[in-house]
Amino acid sequence: MNSTPTNGSLVLAIQNLGHVPAFKNKKIIAGKRLITAPKARQWMEQATKDLYSQLKSLYQTKDGATSTEPWQQSAMSSWPLDDNWKVIPHITVRVRVVEKGKEGAIVTIDKISPY
Image: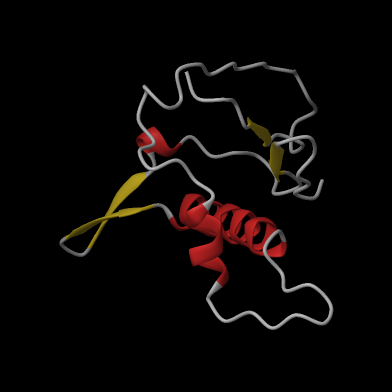
């Protein structure tokens, strides 16, 4: 699934990365350091890259236009000034059982009018 803004909604997906590791107990000791298990770390890095790619694709320069600022600044200017519970007062979570290896997440962020 691709990121697609529709009617004030932003849809991001983490899919086709295989089983989602349980990060709670995935720390190991390497030498004298506590690190995240390599498989769990690789999964998280790939998920982060996928989300980054989806967000960046939403802020591409249109044909005939030249961007004078990094896409991150454009993206951040559309975010609320404060992302605390007063600005985001409601979260809905839905769960669907899928085949092993097909786990993931689809996150939909809806723009709502303030207060």
